[in-house]
Image 1 (cartoon, rainbow, N blue to C red):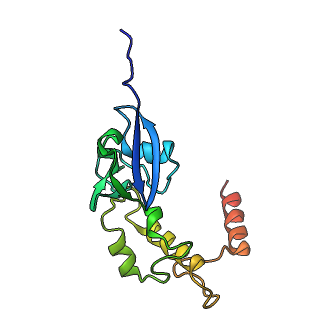
Image 2: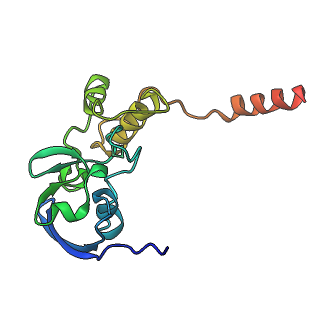
Image 3: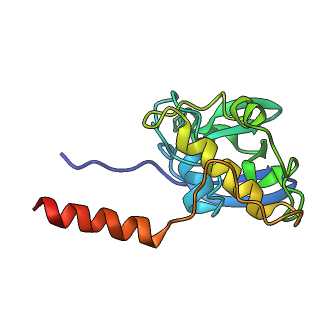
Length: 160
Ligand code: FES
């Protein structure tokens, strides 16, 4: 038996205030349509079963998980993706506290690190993207000390 994919259809959407159009088969998930067909890669693929929230978007004013929706279901809709949250290259909160970061990601399920590395990454990104205020290092990040690393390498070699 030969499997035949459904007929692709032209889908038109307003995303982040701009008109987009692309072709999608009936089985194409909105997540893949946004990323692969339209090139909006800010919407991420995580669990692909509606658990993690990595694919979250605002669809006609409601927060939804785009991995649970087929692209053909949203023809003509208005979508806000993470790319639409930025004002140019500025973050809306250039110096978020750890509490604000944790609140901001609370709808996402981290399945590997208990949010530790995600929080560190957000802090590091915010520090790099924030207007220059100081040369302070993002908290929680330490510079790699070559001398320390060298001594660790030496210790490893000695154990062999
Ligand atoms: S990829 Fe959609 S909820 Fe995880």
